[in-house]
Image (cartoon, rainbow, N blue to C red):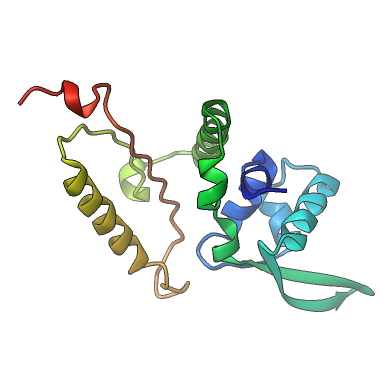
Length: 182
């Protein structure tokens, strides 16, 4: 199974997202977080991700005679490869993006379902801006964003920290560069 098929399945994507932020979860904890996914389905997809090396066993303990495993995400394995991206058709990209956006919508719905949302208090935001950049300036911007996020990816839980989900999408505007008037 290529990385696109593996990672962009709606249930497997949600499993991967549950582990973001260097979390270690038991299958029971994962079931609590993804309560709308039937247990057998969840266990099957955890198995697929573990067999593919995207999840690794972080520990195991006996609970009422059965082994309960805890898992963690192998971040390097949880990315779609450049070769698989290059081999995707426009329709494949459309489906992948739809899966990504659907997962984002589901995350937002879960936030709203907690009751009494206060976007300012909770640090929730969404915005789209249009900016004019050369290819070099855009490359610099993307590098800056990567560096800002990378510097914080090693933060550990505690010290008043709250896990935050940050989703980024950048797209070209409607006009190809040669059509832009200066």
